[in-house]
Image (cartoon, rainbow, N blue to C red):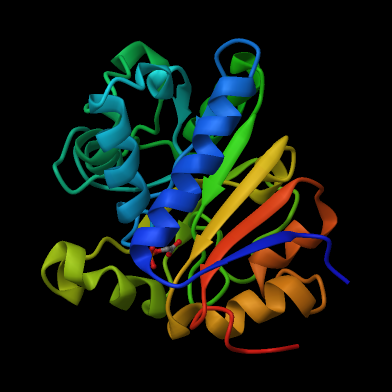
Length: 246
Ligand code: PGA
């Protein structure tokens, strides 16, 4: 039985407000500058909109964190506008004036992916680990780009994206053929040491995976089930995402 704290919302706007309240409380109560993972995807957009609005209305403490990248496509130039680093920059990091020095990001053009995995895992450790990991969930239960079958012990990994994930990202790239086939991600071996985790999920496409996250057997076939073994997990989800019961 899971002990995750679930906040059910009725709209995307409400998800944005609840997630922003959670984030604001976390930043306000943190002693120092926390290391925070932020997700890409469509789900967190209302959250980013709400945070940027509050920041622009004077809540500048919301920009007091160091950003740790969760995942990134491979084989694209650094700074490519479709990279996750650029995407997060546009949606939240630039509006909050998070300086480039305060962003620990992947090298999307790296040629030695093993070395890049080691470098990023080390960089996260040297920064002091993850204080808050905010993540989404894939329809197949992936967290970051830890696709089904990913070991729970890997600190970071290069991954071949599943067709399901590439289809889910095709809109962002224009068409399926353009979606990169490989990516790099912090592994569950790193994510499971986060002091706190906040997961955001909306829509019926996430319902089966979310149900397994909460009630299923902990197994690598559903990567998100690692959360059952962690304390301090909050899930903000809408009715559709929570529509499959145990
Ligand atoms: P989405 O992506 O928010 O676009 O659904 C989430 C994910 O795949 O992790």
